[in-house]
Image (cartoon, rainbow, N blue to C red):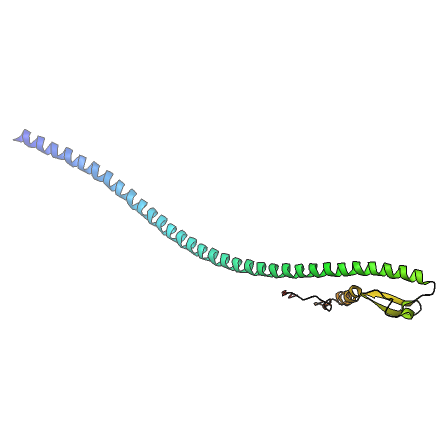
Length: 187
């Protein structure tokens, strides 16, 4: 029995050696897994923190976008009001230009009429029947009467207000037969 027992014990030693070898390999593998598990847990924690920060960033971005949208809407509304005001002022300027143009024509006709009337003629002497329509004769200190159109009279208060830096230009009286349309001229 000595040889058979020696063989069995030798086989057991070989099997125990193989078991020991595999146990050491398994321990190393488990050590690597433990180390990798700690790294994995760190990665998961970092990912969770990054996700939370991204969600907060998105919330801030949404709030900023809404604020910018409201600001842009207000600016668009102000721009539309300003466009309406500029349109109104442009139309008003065109009407004044037309009135000035007709006044210049009438003034030229009045000058021609005065030239035909002779030297020393003044509108102050002539009376209202000679003064062209749309003009008013004003007495000048030494030069006799001066013709001023309605447009010129309307333009002078606006020019004075602009020189003073006034925020609101007084509106001239409407022309005869003119009916003012609804216009939002909030200056």
